[in-house]
Image (tube, rainbow, N blue to C red; front, side, top):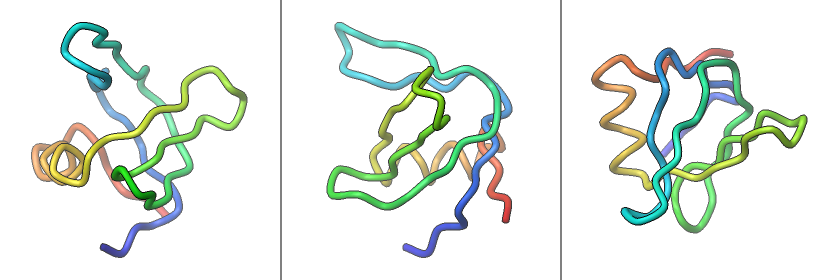
Length: 69
């Protein structure tokens, strides 16, 4: 999967395991492909998280995440 270097989260996106769901705040993130999916980094340490490839593709297709750069 080819990724741009930046993603914009347009609405709070859920991540984490079912019992420990959290929501990533809206904003710009650096992204990279990793073993477990797509890694998101705010780069100030506030919110770093990973989405599976399937969840990432669904959020992009449904407009919750936009690719930039």
